[in-house]
Length: 361
Image (cartoon, rainbow, N blue to C red; front, side):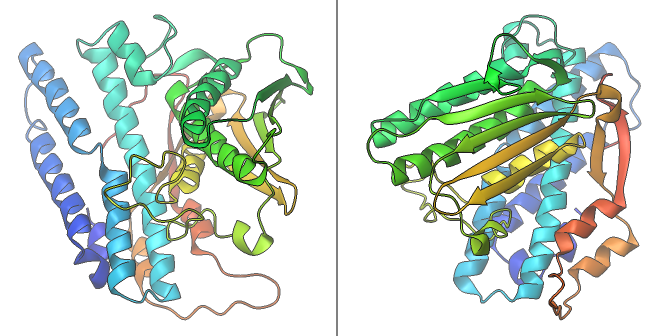
């Protein structure tokens, strides 16, 4: 909330941004009431119920904040300095949102009354009772890949009346069995679903008939489990590839409120930057490498060892304010300045993934 107040005045005046700010103020007022209460069973039950209400209230935060940025672009000229401030803020804002929702899901699953089917629906991948809250100690990467592919394929078939096949490999050979890691299945699914949607759209628009398959190669190394997704969708120009993780850029036409649900393979352009935040949340990453005229490779890096997969969280302090001051940035021949790279210098590590997540909101 303190960081929202530092946003450019023009953006703060946008109706959608004001609505998001009101949601956070209301949720903070509701949750702070429990701070001094005794942890009696009725209070704990009431706390869980309140958390569920808060989670539901904030379900549309990403789309609403995106709409606020669109409102700004449509009504004002956005200079590069303001755009950098917005990029810096949204990376931190959405990373904090991922963490808060992770905590809420974890608390309500472990200490609430939701069990069984409810647990499976929250995590996104039903795998019985082995979960620790929303964490799966034996998350099968291959199964999540297949699940994300099938759901993206369903959308692709509806829109293009065809879809590319999936070629799933492990260490370069056809996949034989599961590849278990300690992870949050819903986070991995989110990243893969977004990548499959992008690849399918590119492949179908490049090859109208006989679309080539999308290849996914799973590789377990000593430090990382790598998920490499390769398509032959024509690739991306280098001038565009640097923009793909910018919140104020999208290769797809901006959706209107009337057709937002009829074009399932396009949106606000937030899919890739938010997917990268999901990967970085547990010290992984998401990277794109493209050959223009041929296709694109996307690689998701996940920590192979759960004790190295700590939360990566933005920390708000006095130094954070300097990134919201308008400055003139001059790029020289050796490289361009990018404020988004500096955001991770001010991060804290808490909560190993191998144990139930717990830290102060």
